[in-house]
Length: 230
Image (cartoon, rainbow, N blue to C red; front, side, top):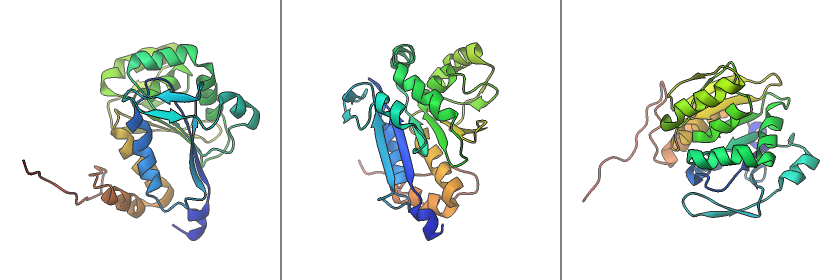
């Protein structure tokens, strides 16, 4: 990757809601944080309908920006919308009641620019399905919620739902690229693949090695720590 590429801004917006899964957020954040992207141009902003939001695991995160502020400033300055998942009941409640979150998902999808990513992890795909953004695409989610995603997508347009670690769903009309990851840890795999697409496979495998994570991707050979002492 050229020095110019390393200096390019990479701004991630992550909308969260009560009960979200923390690894859906921090797994990809760890990957992007270990990339060669300049820390001064790389950022993650937390958006929420409340000042603080507590994850399913009991970790509370502070809001960086409100949905009202995003409505005024626009979403164009963000390169990625990272949508975490949760236990289905929390996601379904947010789909029904969190209009700010759903507006951001819909608004980001129609942006123009091929350097933008709409990235859902685990049941975060249910938000995309409910917004009608997966119609005519292939998508995945947590294995236990595949049928739920199918049902939601049937209401908004046909979608081929598959059990995979991640799926490249292609581009929206304006150029935003849609990526869905399967359950929880699959978000790490998908984030590594996004790094590969942006910066090359060498950078992605180097990151996986630093994380001591076995990235099972075609053509990639990893040397990771194995075994245990009990």
